[in-house]
Amino acid sequence: MEKYLLIPLAVFSVIGAAAAVKDKSAAVRGERRVPEARLLLYGLLGGAAAEFIVMAAIRHKTRKKRFMIGLPMMAAAHFILFLFLIK
View (cartoon, rainbow, N blue to C red):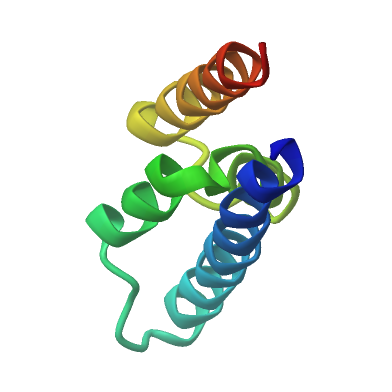
């Protein structure tokens, strides 16, 4: 059962990381951006850890507290919830 809990985390990690890269690229080129609410939603749905790591690596949204504090908090909540569910 535990492996099925990891599937949504993996899917939203890829989606969230890709959205962060797309938003950074759009910002550099002056194109239409990915809404912040959507980036946060991907994090909330399971992609917080990967999204945080990617954003830090590409230096995107690093001045925004809602991302630099919120995403790690979401990732910690996901970890705690996962530990609770596998017991």
